[in-house]
Amino acid sequence: GQLHIEYNLKKIDIQILQYLNNAGNSNTAKDIMALGLYTKGHVSQSLKNLKEHGLVDAVHDRDDARCVHLQLMDEAYGIIKQIDKIYENILSVMFHDIPAEDLEVFKRVGQQIVKNINAYVE
Image (cartoon, rainbow, N blue to C red; front, side, top):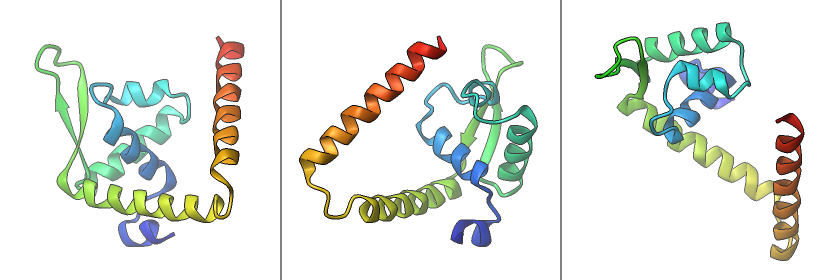
């Protein structure tokens, strides 16, 4: 939608920006790959695009030069705010007129489903 047109960002680019915003020290391409959501080629292409747009920078680790951390640049934070606002609007539409107690049940069921999947996969 809007972010694709305005910034030429694909869905994977937006997801990687969001991931890096919350990643803490787990901010390498290897960490992104460990999520198991994308191929190595897709991650590589996305990071190249994000670097070209000045949204992400690669910084070598002080202790291990082979390790490269991905750092969000200032302009990325403005885009992340827009992403958050878009998701907020989507959620308000999705959950409009649903009572709080029903949302709690929905949340508990969702958490149990995730636990079940994780237990099955391990």
